[in-house]
Length: 510
Image 1 (cartoon, rainbow, N blue to C red):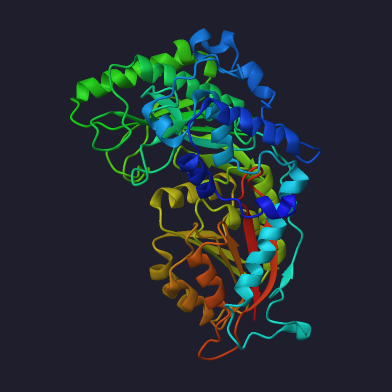
Image 2: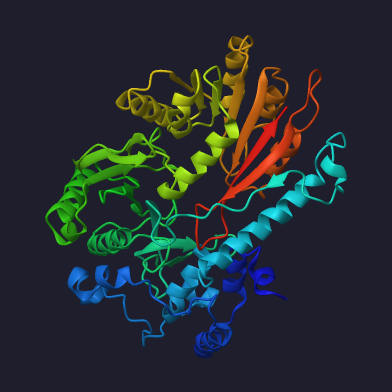
């Protein structure tokens, strides 16, 4: 079996299975090191490589000896309860975190692209079997062949340290400490949650890791307990860190109020602000700090607004020729240089003209509309999250873009009214950019039945999700009247080096 075949469909859940099945023993790490050293060649990164920029950021002088994390082989082998259950020793914690979050990190980047290209090819072959029987097999191709043109994957301009956003949780670490800041692995249905460190991941920025370690120090010194579950009575829940290409840094801390008195919450707000502004966390050099009180399972900005403790109200980022204000709850692709490549593919696929009207469905904060507005007559975006619509309108204002309109509401409810208003449009193009589970079937039905829609660009962030696959197959169903849409082109774009994720741009035409 080739190396590509061995890793081509590596998923995060496979790492979970590895965590649950490996026995906890001192010799397991040594055995794994020997295996990877034997496989090491020009295409594989050595297993104990520490990404160089972290050496400076995570040095002793930055956070003190008790937070020193550069030593590669800790002598202490004492694991906590959750780590023993999953078979992870403290000495292995960073490596196991990397295997779960960035499963392709051991491969050189050209090999990662080969893996992802092979995965997309397999996905399209599976999709071909789901297309309606009326779909033509161009050039006499068999049904097992690809259903459309497949482009070579577009690589990311930035391979390491590309993520501009991290969301850290608090839980029991590999050493058993209950106030460890990092990434939670496993689920309560399978075993005790384990919090593994995120400070050596190749896709993360060193300044994010520095802020997470500083927040860990704050939480461990706090009189309030950490909140790993909503019902455990704890308070400190999570840390959000965002950064811009210009080097500006924003953080937001979420606290579960439980039954705390307002005065107690206010005291913690002041202590948090002082810690990062002039205390031990000042070396993080935050440009803005926010505080959020939230007792819900999911803490959106609409449910629990962010309270600014100090600094600017938002970061400013540049995406192509557009300026974007990025608040703590804003959606922005985590890899901006690669996102610029993604939107260039979308623009090329949409083939807009000065007479075109662009429907931007699931528009988020409006990057597609704002970038393509100069290519068409009008852009109409629909988004279910009110705060995202607010950000989109503000971004249009600061860029002086006037031929865009953003509508707050569910796409399946708002789209029929928009299509009715555009029934005389001669050139209607849609861009659909949903989350991982696609859009509601009603949205697909409405688009297929729209006679003026001549082209549709679907951006799939998880193309192997069953609902996304159902969306793509349904788009090719013949409408009651008129011509059906045909899948014409697929272009994979790698926004997530070292992981098995990618964005797939699929173009449908009548």
